[in-house]
Amino acid sequence: MVRKKTRRTFLKKIMGSFLTVLGISSGGYYYANRIEPSLLELNELEIKHRLIPKGLEGLRIIQFSDTHLGFQYDLSQFKKLVSKINQLKPDIILFTGDLMDEPNKYTKLNDLVPILNNLHAPLGKYCIFGNHDHGGYGSEIYRNIMESTNFKVLLNQSVKIKLKDGSRFYLIGIDDAMLGNPDLPLALKNVPNNHFNLLLSHAPDLAETAAQYPIHWQLSGHSHGGQVKLPILGALIMPPFAQRYPEGLYKIEGKYSLNLYVNRGIGTTRLPFRFMAKPELTIFTLKSSSFT
Ligand SMILES: [Fe+2]
Image 1 (cartoon, rainbow, N blue to C red):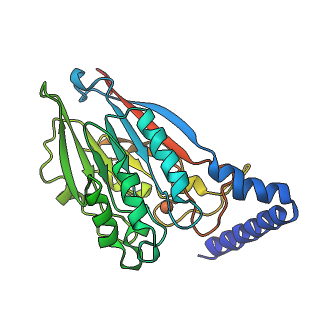
Image 2 (tube, helix red, strand yellow; image 1 turned 180 degrees about the vertical axis):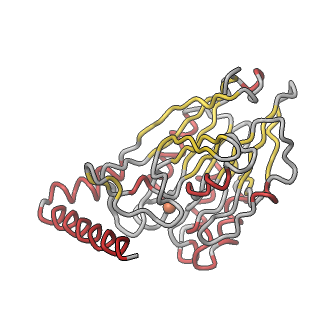
């Protein structure tokens, strides 16, 4: 306990110094406040697994996360992101939570609807709840806006993604670990164990629990990649349930073996800065493999 406190104090001091340095150096402040938050990194990954049938080879899935509209990120930026996503021609679009920073205070819902409606994916648009989507009694606001723009909200439930030739996989969505009620057994109720299973969980740290179930890949957000990072020390502030897996790809061993991918998200929260944690869009391509 004492060690934890000392570490927290230490990190607070470092964070304070970082912000002081940013404040002193107007270039640094400008970069972290205006430049880096508006950059976008495109990461492309293959999802290989022996349970992915040949018929699903080449299927393109785009994940975006943590837009936090209304804090620093605005609708004109989101409109550009939506065009970018459409240009990439995804088969499926996934949103892994935290759409608005404060749903109950967000005043531009009417302008947000046509932008979300403009996202196109022939095999569907799916989303889950993040902690900010529940915060301030925002749950129904979030659910309504996503459902009215043709997103299927996966709240402790699954959906079968099936092509005309019969090849399929299962997409599972779990409630947020911080402010919701995640229930993996309920979410997996209709999922057979002989197909590829892809889990969406806002909170990355849930992967350790998910590895106890027949889930092959998990896609998460929530961490913002630390949002502000320092060389060597790495991410300084990690929210609860994003303490262990800040960004990128991890292999989690449990009863089953799980691949976890953590997307750094798009927007910011609490502090209007990103430093060494660029906004990210991730494109996954499915591949059949005889080994994994
Ligand atoms: Fe977030």
